[in-house]
Amino acid sequence: MDPSYLVPVAQLMRDVPSSNELVFSAPFDADHEFVPRGRAETDVEPDALVDVAVLLQSFSGGLRVKGRVAAPWFGVCRRCSESVHGRVDVAVDERFVDHREPGDDDAYLIENDVADLAPLVHDAILLELPLAPLCREDCRGLCPYCGIDRNEASCDCSAPVDPRWATLDGLRLAEETSAESNEA
Image 1 (cartoon, rainbow, N blue to C red):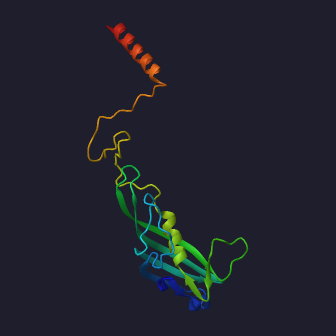
Image 2 (cartoon, one colour):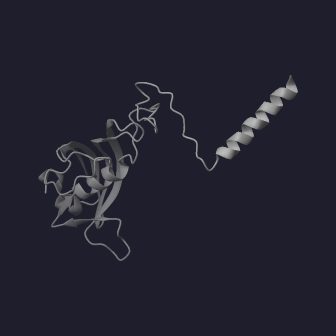
């Protein structure tokens, strides 16, 4: 557990209402608790620095944590399979409480007068990762027939004719030919 994410909150909890601003950077997963995702999935390097800027505001029985967290991510372009890198920047507004009431599963727990911000940071970042990133908005992708990267070169590939529909293509050509002869 990275101690950077552990925030002593006893004083804040005693002086209601009070607030404390926190700004720090810490590794995303220094203890390597998360299993790396597959090559085709978007992920965050365990040692990537997460920027955290939050305001802790106390209320009777808990804290409100509001601010922003940001981290770099990497993945694979969904169209051309090139490596993609980006940065996720997420607004957070969450509650930490001394004890959960029945049905209050949305709040994080304060344990031993310490708020562990790591679960909040991890949840916020992992939920905001792009599911299918693009290397650029106008990425043309790979040709589905020859596999050439259409961003770098072009090809003359055409879809193969499905023998089940070949007869219909013949009908269409016959109609076009008869329409052309009627116009002449």
